[in-house]
Image (cartoon, rainbow, N blue to C red; front, side, top):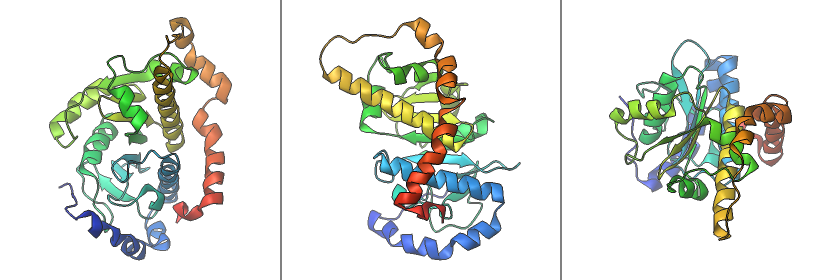
Length: 274
């Protein structure tokens, strides 16, 4: 059964030190494979980067990554922990039914479980699933026209963009088939009236895609605020965006930028890797 927290907001704060005591870096690292530990470090880094960019919406958004191996397990944030506090050790490992695979003082966000479990179960390539609800992302998700082809960033999103209509807070299992159907094989999903989501084969690529998606939305909202007519990019240019991206990023924006982003985190606060 899915473990859902019923603690009051003030209660969860007191558990931050407890979880680091219960699940120290050495104890968790000793229990998992080297591949899982690396996935934990990368996902914890992604949480810290989302916090740095101001995309976290307190504790109410979520990023997940599949645990390497034959089991259908994935990692997600401890519900109630600020993204700037997330570490490799504190990530909660669960199965597709929402059961904790390793002990944790924290429960998980039930809406996060619904969305992420649906996509991880349906897509073998969904090694990482990132979802946020920023002001710009939600603003564009509420626009009937959705993402407009008005920026260089948008041309990398549009060919891989799908939409899913809002059905309320994602707490019901019966929404999963519709979510999976609407996403299809795409890498970007606009959750109408809700926010943005990316699916990728690595944590690095999921973050790179999220960055591009969010920048697309920010630029669109600012361009619209100018009040003047907007210039749309030609569909012919958008059709070649994948080729352009490969040429500009040496095969992948995530692979190119990720080591530099980790160096940035190491300068600011290397505790994400604990």
